[in-house]
Length: 379
Ligand code: PMP
Ligand code: GLN
Image (cartoon, rainbow, N blue to C red):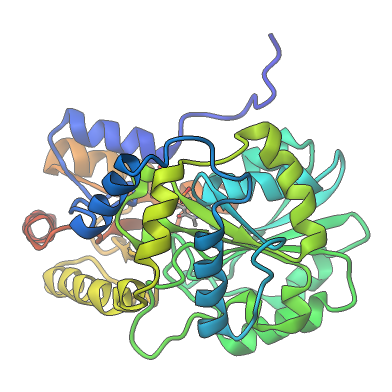
């Protein structure tokens, strides 16, 4: 058998989590909360099951949930999507990304991917026989150079994938950067795939600038979101995407043959739960406390960090402690010290290695304190 993904190996998240389990390490590698989702939300799912919502949902998702999604986006970003033709509820953001890529990328099409990038983009492009065009974000702080981006756009460019707030760097695109992007794409046919799964996890004075709030971006943008990130239930694999009707029609063709629809009772629960905006608007404050706690805990160590602006990840520079490659160092942290992280080079173009690790701080205070204690002992 000839593999369609010959270069592909097991995801770094799976590898590190398995290693962490094997060695009983504190796991700050794979991005998921180690605390419970809200009981009220779990009760809503049980209620929906007991109320008999156990058969197929409509392909696009149930109408009350699509209505809540449309209202949330309008309230936050001022853009009103059409509930019936521009929203699809998906099996996590991962499926939304996959629908977008497979619906539009043809053999030979180029897709620009900003590195470091989340690991599902490029394999999906490969399945569609497209060509990923990686652009490494500049320097240790990973800034987009618009000149480089402009140079890479040509008649073969089908799609550009962005992610803000950004995993793993914790950067967010500013209004000015989104405006530059808008100006750059305005006169092209490039589809913008905007991965906004960390939209509500945003810190300090930062604001999340969604592609939906820029008219020349929203008319070409597919925006992906994840309930798992927002409501602490990554294992439910629920998310959604919004896009102009002409794009959504094509994505729904893929959806129909891919899964048809997603878990019905959970959709009922989210439709209720989203009626209370505090359930997502307070997320930034909640995670900012965790980020600050983690930063305090590593303050007097040799690990150096520029505070994350969004996401539940913190990048940490260990070059004062070791010159080992990040893959080796992160493995040694598990086996010798009992703490798991993600080496950042695996997300970078050509495995560029700045001696940085990514730590997930979506953890209980107790777990963060244990992590802090271990990191303090690493010289
Ligand atoms: N995009 C990014 C940047 C992510 O970090 C993740 C989750 N780790 C996803 C997409 C996928 O989200 P979901 O779990 O909802 O499929
Ligand atoms: N998005 C999560 C992370 O970045 C992992 C998701 C997964 O394991 N596929 O850690």
